[in-house]
Every structure is written in structure tokens, then in C-alpha cells.
Image (tube, rainbow, N blue to C red; front, side, top):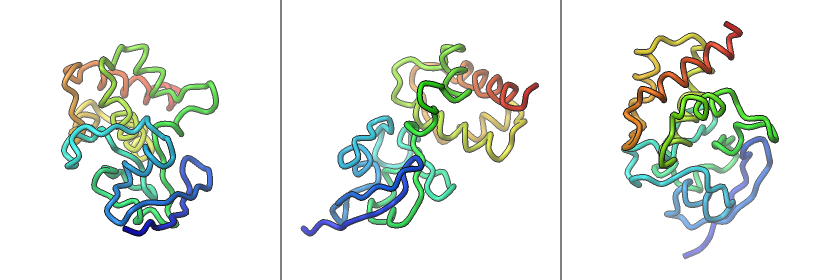
Length: 158
């Protein structure tokens, strides 16, 4: 199989990588770019662990081909912190113990950030709806929802 050269912007940086025709964006991020924060949970788009932003749209990177990233902007969990300063969502996940095994955490964080960028003052129901595509087998979701609501309050300055 021939490899395709893909140029994109990942977490604000111009990148170039090679990928096979059938290689997923998830595989390219993890294997070619060594961005291993994005996790593979199911490989079928059902769990949300591999969620990333692709040109401002929340997607499961296991369902997107790497070649489809050509010329696009991709945001992963690695791009949330600014140096050593964690994003408010990351801090609140830690403060609320909203993680256990960590497989779902990157997808939850990316999904929650996408929500808060669109709606800085969501209700609990809206948070639960927005995170519905992310499966967690450990926490029971309550702490995750509380962390997102707390981060929203902080980000609004409330």
C-alpha cells in the first residue's frame, strides 16, 4: 500500500505525517504523531474515548480516515493545557476525582470543552446530554458532570 502525505494543524502546530489509505485519524495521531492522549476504546464510534475536534466539530477519530485530516485543524487533549497550566476542566476533573482508569477521560474533556465553548452556562441536563456519547465504565458519571458544571462556573467567573 502507498502512504499519503498529510499536512494539518494539530493543537496549533503545523504537522506533516504519512498514513495508509485505510488508517484512521486515531491511528495517525497515536502512531505517527505520538499523541497518545486520545484513546481507543471501541474502534466503532460508540464510546467517545477517541473524541477530538476536527475543524471545530466534535468527532470520533476512530471513524475518520487520517487522509481526511488534510488541511484541517485538529485539537486533542494534549492541546488543552497551556504549558504547565491545566485547563479549568482538567483541574476540576482532578479536584472532583472525576476519573478512575482514565480511558474515557480525554474524550470526556474534549467533549466538555466543546460544550462549554458553545454554551458557557449549561444545565446539568445539558451536560449529561452533551456527554452521552462518552461511555465511562468506572465513575458513574456524577463526578464528571459535577466537574464540568464547576469548571463552567469558574470559566464564567461565577
